Length: 286
Image (cartoon, rainbow, N blue to C red; front, side):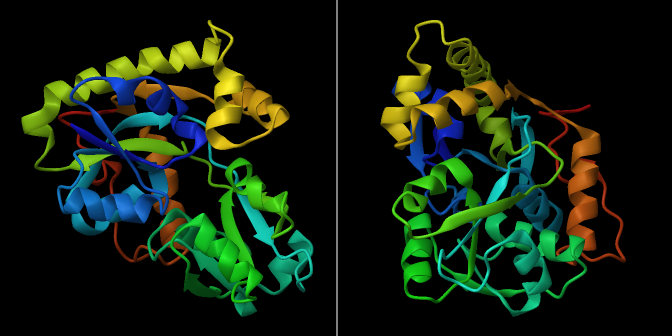
């Protein structure tokens, strides 16, 4: 079974343990959720660990890929990264000038794209301009060339370029739903249901090992694997809530749908049900 995910610290339990299991292959997607959705549609991967808002929107639009479980319960705090010498130096600056700013995004429909729209809706602003930068490295290059003003990305992951002075983080934006879920194609689960159930169960064990830090190696692993500082690794371990289960919160998906509609990413004149985003014969809608 081929599993897709981002090469970031949220997936440490997968990278550390399950990628070594015979018959399970982990494929890294630095571009994020949009790239994984494309890979799922092409059957290049069987299962993905991806952003809740991204796969919810995709599932409601196409029905081809659906949520089958929850991986990280915490909302994802998207760091708002700007040039240290640019005209935007605070969240007040950002909110007052949203419509005129250029946001770097990994691709249309990605989490970085969707959350920029959600934040514009919260601020009652027109949507900003978008430039596709593909990866965090692409965003770094675009920021240095002055082609983008803002880049939304995980703070800890993006800190490697903050330390280099490419950008600085002036605040965060966030949804109020679980950050990461499992998803697969609607025609995949029946053939691979046993393997999917086994993967999620084994991953839950790895999450417990990582969180309880039974061997004292969780923080050193995070520092070495993801190039983050000791203080960042310690803080991450305090706050992360991994929850690898074939269950998803109905209320959480309702909040995602509401945010996507308020942001005009989903049509506001249509009614959507959480069951349309979830594969209910695999995943419990709780």
